[in-house]
Image (tube, rainbow, N blue to C red; front, side):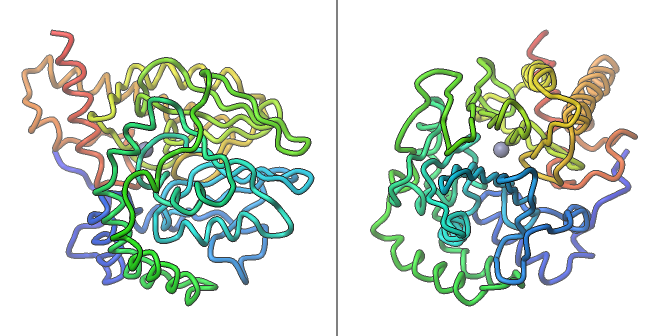
Length: 349
Ligand SMILES: [Zn+2]
């Protein structure tokens, strides 16, 4: 059985091909056309910003933008700011500039986990008088990401050039500058400046209260942190939630579907009915997008277990698709999700 959705390579536009090429060079995820179509409407004007900022609550903005890497959260209060997840290397400086607009001084930046599409812009944040915070288990993995960052830097002007956005020329110049600096850079240019002293770490950002929260088990990775703002008015889940998309499985980072499900139950229990949830990828939603991610993982475990019980091989199972996958974006990571769960379940034998 094969999938019946998603673009085939032959249907790719030139722009898709450029984007995918840049993303593969960086080892990073980029979205298919289906996910781009789900781009949310803009509240803050995007007439003059590179990123499509959207107001999630008063003083709290998000970028849920399938073309530029992991989603970003910006909390501002009384002239201070905290930003979580720094996207790709070539656009880190643009993200910093736009995060500091309107008189905001960023005090903190946060990585929800080490993946390169969430930490690539770190080089712009850890030298700007900003405290860049990650979980202690993220640090060695960030420092081990250099090949991805190099790919993101060297492919940066091509990546930015393939987008069509306000301030494009400035961002293209910045991407070029970063490329010319690469020979002088190493992984420490992407490193955090502070590690969470405990698995729950509260920060004050003006009058806003921000709680960084790591659940002590491997989920999407072994270092996932969620960002809880103002008593769960807004939660940035990082890649614990892919909304409308296949989730990305990274066995090298310790992913387990069952740990992921257990963590999602805890995150869901923190939500109020009106909590705004910013996923790692995909559009902003409510607590229901956490339920949907958990349901995907539970159904995937059930479906793969049936194939294992029927004697199917990993390769045969990885070709499959089931009804609960219909219409999801990130088709390119479907097979790796199946393979990871297959191996997780086989590990029980
Ligand atoms: Zn990730």
